[in-house]
Image 1 (cartoon, one colour):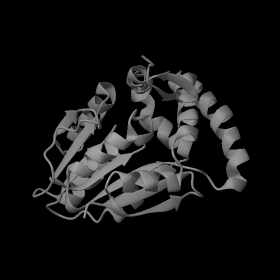
Image 2 (cartoon, rainbow, N blue to C red):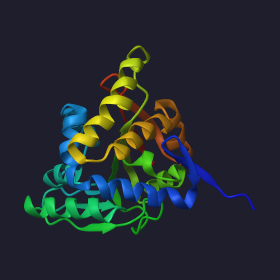
Image 3 (spheres, rainbow, N blue to C red):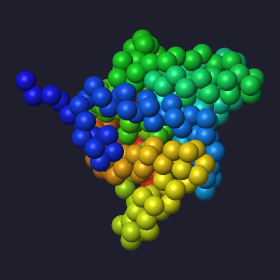
Length: 245
């Protein structure tokens, strides 16, 4: 019987191995994750996330699910939006990342509910959340179609899914972006996080992730409607939005 395979960066691995290998990457980088985000994006990740919050339309009293929420940048911003009447769940499959996120939200005065879970099997009821977000996490998931369908399932009718992810850069910038990704990024990872390999995987995983139109089609196939997207920083990142109608 043929073994099902998938990609881990540019490497082909058995499907059951990918989750373990991704877990090793994020367990390795968790302590330096926020510092490296600022360095490798030149602080732009803060602007991308602020735009996501703005586009979300989240209001006081809403229920929000932050999938692969990591160190809780979006969860904290949403917690301020929904207020005491609302609810924000911080989730991640990786214990090291989730622990940092949990500690951070508590330190900031927002004791949010947290859950360590796989995005492909979300432990929440149907039709529950007003908004679901996943920021820089979808590309690491083994079965993206399954995860997208799960995120749609837990949305209430009229709710929206926001996917913030690295995408296909504007073609004239591709040579410079490649030089940065495959040379400078692993070098920074080595110097700051003592881990060049994890940041080499990051560059490779971005190249293997579906582009803007491909991801839009995947979201539509998962049952989301009125799907659109916004290119940010010349397509280095794209924010996709789809509704459950």
